[in-house]
Amino acid sequence: MRNKVLVTGGLGFIGSHTVVCLHEAGFEPIIVDNLSNSEISALQGIEELIGYSPAFYQSDISEFPFLSKIFEDHEISAVIHFAAFKAVGESVEFPLKYYKNNMGGLITVLETMKAYNVNSVVFSSSCTVYGEPNQVPVLEITPMKEAESPYGATKQMGERILRDNASWCNTQCLRYFNPIGAHPTGKIGELPLGIPNNLIPYLTQTVAGIRKELTVFGGDYDTTDGTCIRDYIHVMDLAEAHVKAVERLIGNQQLGSFEVFNIGTGKGSSVLEVINTFEEINQIKVPYKIGPRRSGDVVKVWAETNKVENILGWKAHRNLSNMMKDAWNWQLELAKKTSNT
Ligand code: UDP
Image (tube, rainbow, N blue to C red):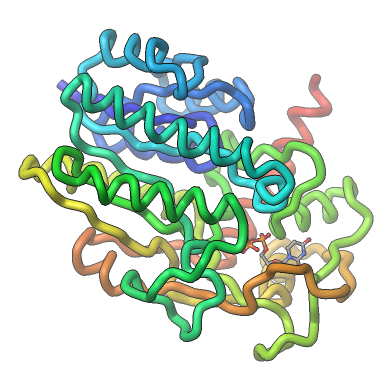
């Protein structure tokens, strides 16, 4: 029998890819998502990829009775907790909304897990917990800086809450760097809601003609070409890291473990490198201009990945060209879907 893994936010960008990878690794994913930042079409994409319709609950994880129903219906072995708000700018504007949703959601998930004696969880954390690092690459032991935004604070607090509950709940905190790309089939990917804040959806929408021009935020930073540097990671690599984390949790029934891993490639790329790689691999020009810096941007950050390679046995396999190819393929698929509706 397959172990059942509850995936909160399982129709979101990273969640949907993880659901597919879980299935491929022999698990049975159970999805809960309130569709606040995702669309039901992701479920259809998942179905096409895995060949059946996984159990799906459209409900809010912050409601104990709703969540309990899922634990009543299924014998859950582990939880992957993605469901949270993630827009940095919006979190500055509406901090209470972020604290209530992200902390409230996590606490209810943990309360429900405790009530049903489920003691394994993977938490979506972020490299944002490091802030502007004094040194790159960043290691898991690099001290956190005070969070720049309420969103970042919810990730730091989430890790803290989990650490404080390690006596009964084994935890893997995965600190994602910059997840991009899409499933290579183009059946699932990142759904843009409104004007994108992130680089890749803005870039692909610009090339698709939805936006006029991409603005590169700052060309005068102290980096090789003056633009900011990030560790971009293919969403499929990231999804596979979750499978490794679940396997490690299920294999370890001794309580009291709390582990943190950087999930990046270990390589930094500048904004201009991203644009050049996109143009090269897809043979299309990106209309862009260099504009002013965006306030709050970290100048450069990338991951040290020794710990995750040695302990979790995970390593990213896809490079920036793969990411740019799959991101563009997804944009083209999205355009087809929109023109069919
Ligand atoms: N960026 C940009 N133009 C955009 C959006 C982002 O130049 O329209 C830059 C941004 O300054 C940063 C990088 O792209 O250096 C990644 O930004 P994103 O918002 O995707 O991720 P984050 O800032 O959270 O790392």
